[in-house]
Amino acid sequence: MYPILYKYFALKKQLYLPGIGCIYLEQMPAELIAARTALSAPVPVLKFNTECGPADRKLFEFIASEKSIDEVEAIRQLQDFSYQLKQDIAAGKEVLLPYIGTLNSIDNVLSFHSLASFNKMFPDVVAERIHREDTPHNMLVGNAEKTSTEMQEYYDEEVVVTKDRWGFYALLLTLFALGLITYYYLQVVPHQVY
Figure 1: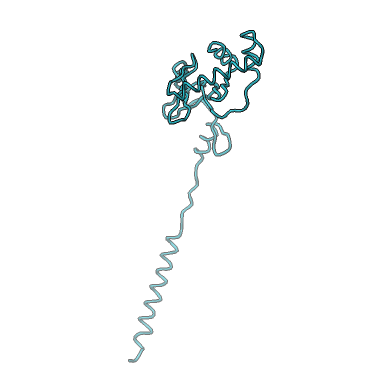
Figure 2 (figure 1 turned 180 degrees about the horizontal axis):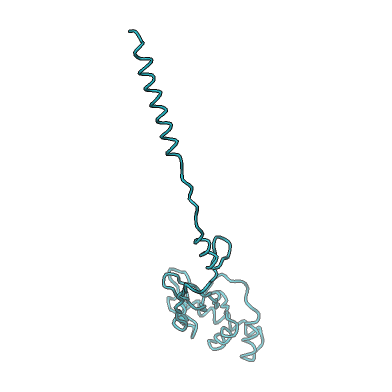
């Protein structure tokens, strides 16, 4: 039964085992690793889920055609095979699904470990940015796209600086206040009788 199930998995990228769960191939997208300035390749990953929908009828048809039996017999053989796998897992054995992975039970929870690691087949690629000072390039400024020459012209514009006159007005106000205080002490205070 193992070769037929592996063949079905290789063709359909998923495998349903009654009473155990589903094993499927999921494509992980490429990822930019900014800290290492690298780009990881898109990698297929084997996943396992104990809660999956009803059995795929195409699996039963496939088993029936491969073994040259009727579909009812294929369903019975697959269920017997899955029952034997569950018994082995419940007994504490680690069940090997050739070329796919291993199934075992840890604290009565089914666990799947993939045999294939596709990360080694697709190494990371160096993605280093090259900035050339003389070549115009597009960049995102806020939510608008500008070229490097437009931004250079923006920063090269001469900024007109107007002089602040607050210091002058503060000095005038201080001199006026000192004048009022001097007038008060010279005119009002000497004429007061105690």
